Image 1 (tube, one colour):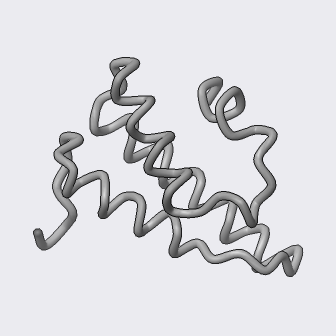
Image 2: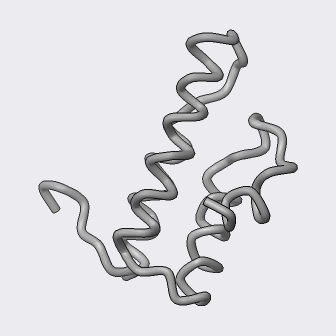
Length: 84
């Protein structure tokens, strides 16, 4: 979780778009993070975004994290989406 805080801690929620999350995933992979770690990171991000939207009314889409996950899987970062 330290990497999440270091890399994305100062990013405002609306700026957590697909491109930024893909770049985060690429950087984490270059640092040696495996498929499970990347999947956990993106799941955690999606949970935070969903919470922000549902509880605090912040207008942000959790779909960005889902799209980043799909993109990273297609870019061969080590995991397959369910049903793929």
